[in-house]
Image (cartoon, rainbow, N blue to C red; front, side):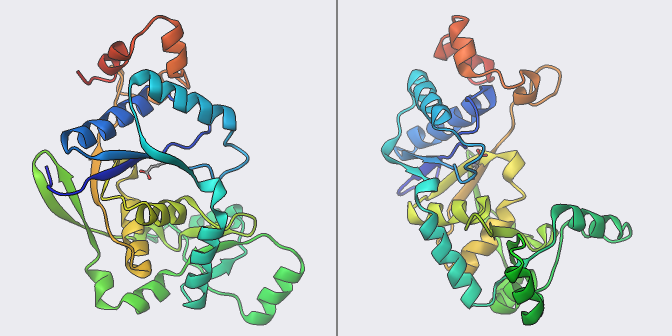
Length: 283
Ligand code: GLU
């Protein structure tokens, strides 16, 4: 295990009750923190105000407490800090790193479908000419703020090709080359919401002084995008650990296997936190 300060976080989105997959992830986060004598901060990634609900946050807190997982300090709710993310977007805009993209999801899907030969799996767009953009804004059209991969490359120069992050685990540290290109021009904000998961997450990791991030294998690839954002914003880079997703005996993700069966339902069935730990395959 790495020496020195260890501050990690558990960052659920309160869009439902915690299920076994979340419990496995939480045990892993607290397990590493405990082994390193570190701290776990709790962050509610609740920028999607249509899907996130206070009752789900209350349920998450209750479940973590029931599992015996204690967090340090106040909870950070992203929905209370939109102005922080807006300021980041403004900085990126002033530096010519983001642009307004007026394409709808459907239009983008059509563009990508029309290029079956291309390896491109993500959208790469371009800033509209000023007059056309002004016209679309005047019309009140919806848009997304996208990070321009080409502007990011120009800004970082050779550092772009050297982007990497460090993975930590029981076997020590090792460097991993980052490749943000397959994600194209990622969305960092929208007309109505001045942030996206990528921006709010990286901003908060920097602000909260997170030294170690423990997350599921399913977010491994996106870490390349986060590495790029950290380089552009000169945010410190935490170390990363990716835990395997817990699969049921049928090879399906636990969250899928049991639908959205929450921990509270298991609790009502008489399961104990020890049972839950065993059900996630951890002893
Ligand atoms: N809110 C994300 C999740 O629940 C956080 C993951 C992360 O950034 O590590 O999957």
